Length: 302
Image (tube, rainbow, N blue to C red; front, side, top):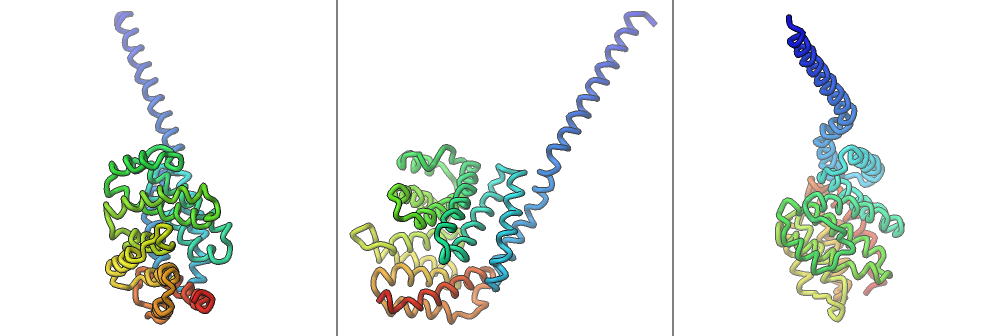
């Protein structure tokens, strides 16, 4: 064998060895870096099933005890998959539901913090869905322009961003800076109406039922619009989601000073069959609990 040929074979062998070592090293690093992500991705169906099971839970106390652990599980998965919009939406929905159902009536300051955490997750999902930039500092007209470019796939992120944002504002209603943000939250939810008004059981209509019914006409309220929004939400669920009647009584009936509407709606919520909407048993259980609290204040408000 010639010296030149031997040298050539030696060089080729060395290159193959180097390439093989490089591939092996990359594979090793990839395995070390992605095993957590693989586990997190494989857990996504379980997280979704857990959310469905929680919505079906009729026992308020059991749900109250279980939700915090579920939220931390979701946040641990987010550490592995920070750009996963589905996980971010699960977290936003979870923080919203826990704050509204179990914290808000007892500790407004803590509820505010929880809504804010939900908002942070929802805004990240919105960024992944295509709405980039700092929405909280973005001028309203620029935000509206960008919202027009979003399609139906962005609806969950839009909905939970608007929902958490509006509740955080409500918890800080004495801060003028927070109230100034309400127009942005409303713009997000308006886009939900345009893209899919049936999403989350007509939740956008419930949002606007409260929005128009929670203030007198001189401050932007519109009682006819509020009633129409609640009625549309009621039609979407066939009247099975009791939170619609609860919020109509709490906001619209109180603003209109319609004591009969207030009493009849809340009594209807309390007396509704426990199995009227199995898929949303927890939401309905919370609505019954809140309805009893509101009825106890009837004489104070009318």
